[in-house]
Length: 177
Image 1: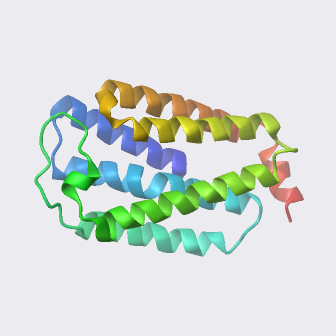
Image 2: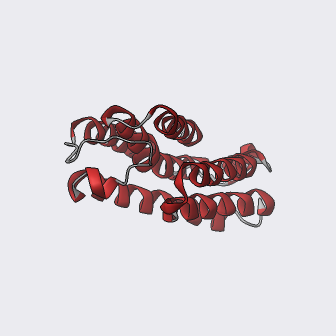
Image 3: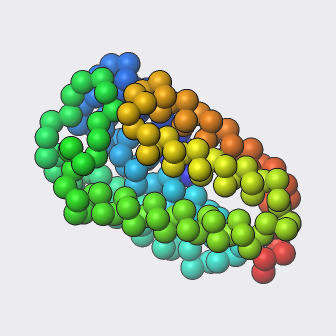
């Protein structure tokens, strides 16, 4: 689900860059990119190691994120072709604070699971860590514009996907129990 959220965020980025940003495109981009991708990746990682409590927590968080993305007021109308900065259009609470908390917790969960399972999946886990690093760098270097951000998004997606499909994921979840 996290890679699907990542793909939807990338599609919103492409739509905003091609046709201009508006409030709706920004909300889609923020929901799937800023609020859902990393937390869903963390939840999925926890589920792979049979942390069953993660599923209801993930559903609760996804519902909260959807509600915030729909209901949080946009403080300044979104327009233009440059990628909008969240701090220019959303108040810190609840939207940006939820994104910070969700991304931090999701990334932490992925890193913990990667470290727990590193000996069983070294190549896949290195690719996942690389994907996380590239995605974080792309977010941090927002001054790159749409083309630069899109390049980071694409590279991160390739690394994350390769990391997920590399190695015995089904055996990983059986051994963790």
